[in-house]
Image (cartoon, rainbow, N blue to C red; front, side, top):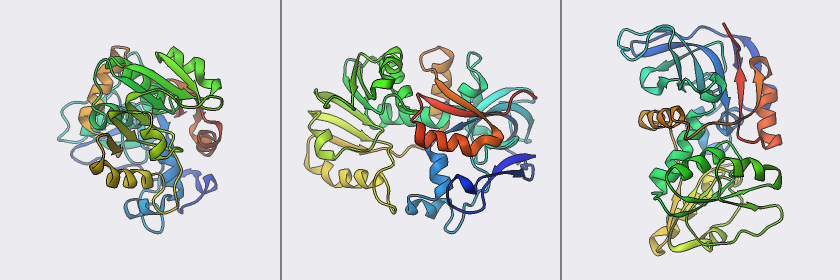
Length: 322
């Protein structure tokens, strides 16, 4: 099969479209003919090996998994002996290592049936970013109906899903984005827009989800109510060793001494979260928006576009029909 393979950490020049062995299906595994794969900042982190602390998990000298990609959507080609929820021909989506390939194998627990109202590209764009948004708002943030919620980075991959989730949970949502994305974020349901390129952040919020990463704890805490919650998510700031987690570590030391709750966001896709997202997407409450799609051989261009173009919503690789 063809796949996007990487043998050393580095830039997109390290990504090659090459032959790779077919994945082996274990007892609880599901073999998927990939129709689409989501592209998110996690792909960039796995490609570059940054921040350096991440190499303790990803591989010290080179990536442990040679094929890039995590989000996947496609058609079931075969199942292991212990699999009970899926059968050949089912359309599924979820997460697995190595989704930038013609075929991928995922554990049954990491997959759900694809919502029928989503395209394969939309479904592939949902798992990682959707889980991050859900974890940030519901689990870390404790979101409740009637709260005033500020979402920084509201036009991005996680942020645009977080806007929809926050409205689903009954919050009053203010989205922070560029002027170019203001109409896009308003159409998602945001009640108010702040253009960070021309306006100063203002207001008082019960919950802030920061997916941009460029502001200090002091600046963000000033926007919180006295007992509000700050959830620190994405952003590519910080040093080479810890990256954006530096703010989360600082927050960990500050939060015992203040009334406000300061939370770092570490989100790993969980079966329960993916099930919730599938239900919400089927109901039309949370729908991924695709800025642009790329063919599998153009994965390097897709990652470059993700980093430099600041897309509205998500981008995806597409492998077309059979």
